[in-house]
Length: 215
Image (tube, rainbow, N blue to C red; front, side, top):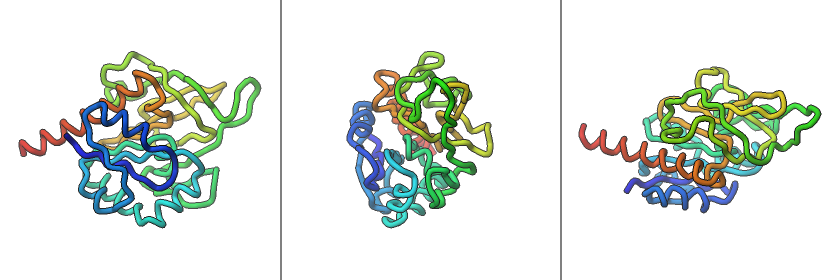
């Protein structure tokens, strides 16, 4: 069974994500240890809350470089919610620099008549990378559960794996590039579709293990 490090930096409940990963056949390790992140087969970076405290907590625990090194090494990496946003250069929510792993910024939804901010509830993904491993065996344009006032805007639109529309605003809901994947929604709160995404991520880790063993 693959070992997936779930990064603990005091920003959200980690156990529901762990449960979904474990149900899919992974062993999870909630950790803030750079060594355990390095030794894991894959990394999950969840998060709920504000941008500045998140990056401050990560840096105070000396986790920025281990996360960057894990991604650079080719390990499967999944960011969830705030764990997507802090991968970017900066956010309109705060003043701290982000991790700068993905070029781009985090922006706030514009106020407009008839929409709520935060965007909270179910919304339908518009898949921009239909062949992305996360979407395997999902229905076309699946529904996922969101809670957010901010969204990511990557400098390279080609890394968008999915978008959503809220009011008149179409924004990034997921990104994917090589081994790095991250989603704005909460798969652990998104019923069978969200659990399938976590299962697909675990399968991706297993496939990489098999490939590595053959080499």
